[in-house]
Length: 197
Image (cartoon, rainbow, N blue to C red):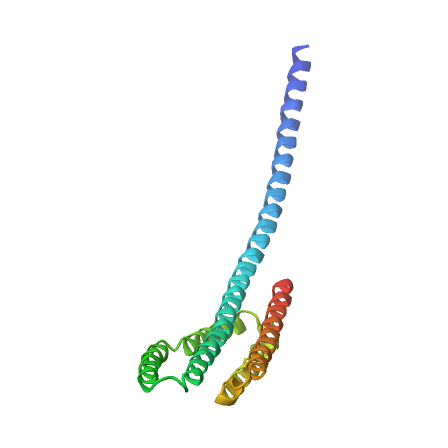
């Protein structure tokens, strides 16, 4: 009887060791598969995070540049309007106004935020192209068109546009309408790019 128990004990120990060894091998394989899967998910997240950050930087620079185009147009428009409205004022008043505008212009020229934001957008755009080429399809969000429109709008700010309220309102409304169109187009492009990530 003790031989029987010894045989059963040996058989159970050997089979238990075999089962334990097989289970441990299967667990190792499953752990390796999970590790590989987790690594792939991590890599995708890293790539997605990088692309997302680059795209957000590009979009932020675009918004800053758009805002500065609007601010610059408004700055010039308001100064021209004040000059036009001061035509019938005394000479002293106009001289003080000229001096104030010159001082404003020096500060405005020194800061030159439009050039700074334009350069920032160009750098962000170049970086985005390197990270994912699909940004190139945006064609810099038609910034050359926006710049041409902006310069043409500045040419329209002349004394004649302030002679009647209708002419002034038309200039401002046309600028705002077209300018908003550029902004909406850009935002739509960025939305498409974000969804494509």
